Amino acid sequence: QRLILATRNANKVTELRAILAGAGLDVELVGADAYPEVPDVKETGVTFAENALLKAHALAKATGLPAVADDSGLCVDVLGGAPGIFSARWSGRHGDDRANLELLLAQLADVDALHRGAHFACAAALALPDGTERVVEGRLMGSLRHAPEGEGGFGYDPILQPEGETRTCAELTAGEKNAISHRGKAFRALAPIVRELLG
Ligand code: ITT
Ligand code: NA
Image 1 (cartoon, rainbow, N blue to C red):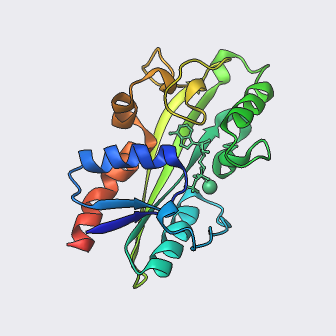
Image 2: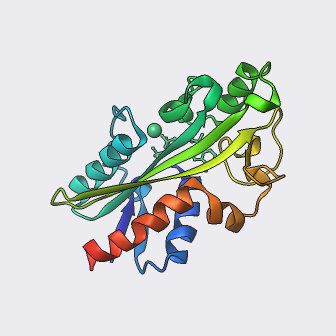
């Protein structure tokens, strides 16, 4: 079975390979980079679920193969849920993780420890070439540090400290992060649905 990952984010690909293998899915995962001729879809949705479905449908339709997509981001309580679906381009430069993180830290410089609640959210979507679709979501609740810590993970990992943890996500091992992460929860919930629909 071939399953295409509708993402060009290499960090997501790495995490999803481990998460889906751990969920016992016997599929060959191919990233969207294997299909350079397929243009990126415009993420015009207003929710993670809508954007994940847009990405999955675009690749499933273009390739004729089942596709899964991840739309994810960081939602900050005191910012009313921002950056949210705009997490990848918060600084104006899409995919510039460092610039995005630095801008967010600057915006929260005066927010005290009691008001730094935040969570990661991930929508995991499956789309089949015939238009069948499923989407599920996962969250990782936590709070934001005042300064980045740790070298692991990607994106906002160095500033998100999960509830009940003393370390940031970037200080966890990949396995520890996947076990509790928004992405791990969402794709472990999607795994039995993939199994059911793909046989
Ligand atoms: P694709 O659309 O090709 O999948 P993308 O990087 O543009 O790649 P998103 O639009 O879903 O993906 O943006 C996700 C952003 O949210 C990402 O750039 C990170 O800044 C942040 N993010 C998502 N998951 C994260 C995680 O596990 N740890 C840290 N930051 C994360
Ligand atoms: Na997005």
